[in-house]
Image (tube, rainbow, N blue to C red; front, side):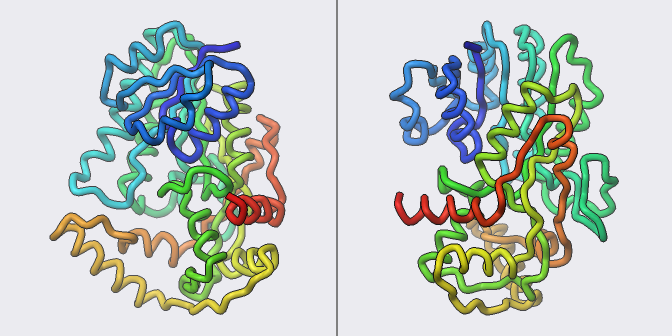
Length: 329
């Protein structure tokens, strides 16, 4: 049994990872902010719930006392914030301080969860861990995650090992939060309430099943090399093929209306204006429209397969599992 600290344990990926660690008999300390979200873990004898956030150094010191391993999943992943500086404060500076405290406390290894978005879009071929980014970042979230990775690659961590994992668009059974947007989209489709096909539906994204991504975190802790990043992806699929497969799996097909790029762009500009004027968070921003409509995001997880033993669930099977869970929850 190991003593393990998890940040972001009440999020989508973090909660599923925490459940796996508890099932394997480890002693887990979970940092949480919301009483409601932490309630799902309160029945386990192997978990210590510690209220606090990434800026609470006292909580971090307490959490990592006599700790063997740390999974750092907590992040500020919104598209917009009233104060743009919050992205750097939580995604970079808080990560840097957490790692410094972990080193001070004698933690053996840390797995830091980043995003595949830091590698940039694909331009003619699948993106891999060492692909040179050719376009600017589309959000402060991407930029500050990249900043954290650069710090890890240059920082002297002493004997402590730090590996990085980069999930793509994760979906599957679990918390229906902002970070589980793909599953929420599937849920809306099943109820006949998602009728939009972005652009012409030809842009490619990479969709990773939650069970695979959780396994990838565990494998990165076991086998991941120091300062290396590992893309935890799934299948490269266009919007059109995504919904075609979903319709086949679900046994229900709804007519979807292609939404022209200019229409989405105008809507996003209005939402951003409204956010800046009245503080109402936008559902989408112009930068995000450019990210999704102007580029493909095909990635390769070959490095994770070769070095970690990462495995990818067939896309149709992953969708079947998700649809079954949504219709029976």
